Length: 415
Image (cartoon, rainbow, N blue to C red; front, side, top):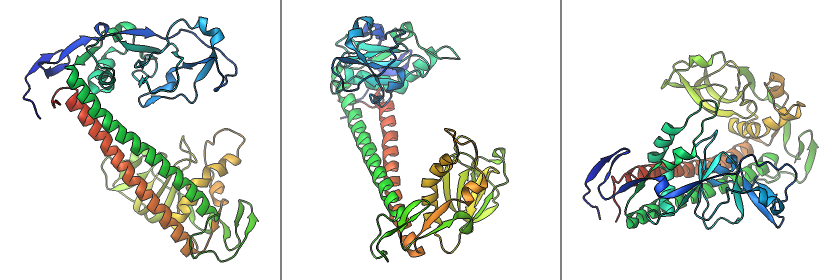
């Protein structure tokens, strides 16, 4: 049922007349983490008698990341004199990356957990505010605007305990808090289930691709001979060939610079980034695979296109494919194996740039063209399924943001 609502003007904007605003210091306490605690050495994740020690990197807006935390022996526990988490606490990062929240829910599996400096525990003490609603308020734009105004320090932005105590917290009537928190939690549950499904399908796709592109698994009707043969890239089926890329495609670079991009222009413009820019002219028209020649995306950024486009002078273009290779099959194999190849050619931990011969001499396992096309279609269908799920997840995230904006400002009321 929709309720006719009267609003009142407050320092954080219009809110319903029956809502209140309190500074956080009237609702709870801010507890500092331990300062300067640093215990080097080996820590056993599964040892008994250890407490879990969180740093700021373990606090994300999706929750705690416990997989790379430090475990500290309780024998040193007397040195950890503050910053111990209690159930329903919220941890806020206050230095460097400011404003990340994580909720220490009753369902979290660990008990003895403490935080380092650079974080503050927000612990409710008032019965006026539900823990689940409070957490939704913290994640809302209403509070993020306050944080942006409070953050100081250009080199290392930070919040102080005094700032946090002054946070203005919205407090609707308790039944409405419960209704809002439940509605938003239901959407979070859907988003989390979609995230898990997407991750599962990505894993399945990766495993399927590894099997199909190496011939360990053959699609029905394509197995011509039994057995495998040893090659420079490992075992491949007896009826597959192995060819270097320079026999299968033209390898060239573009001629444009990044500053040639034009916002909202007609054609795709591939630069040394995963972001595809736009441009109003094109130098190429056809099927091509592209990869960054240098920069942070070296060996990691790949694009496939059919149509008109242009590219940066330090982006490699593979096009004019031989009749022996399907372009999308080439893209799948190249994008999943090129980084490992260039890393094997250097003693460093990263590659600064790609030389043409790194691409030209890379060999590609080739089944007959009709099997390549069949493999491409299977993996393309899996990509399309992932895209649909990702689009649904993204729309649900937008829905959640819209709901938060409506419900946490009282524009839409729940009873």
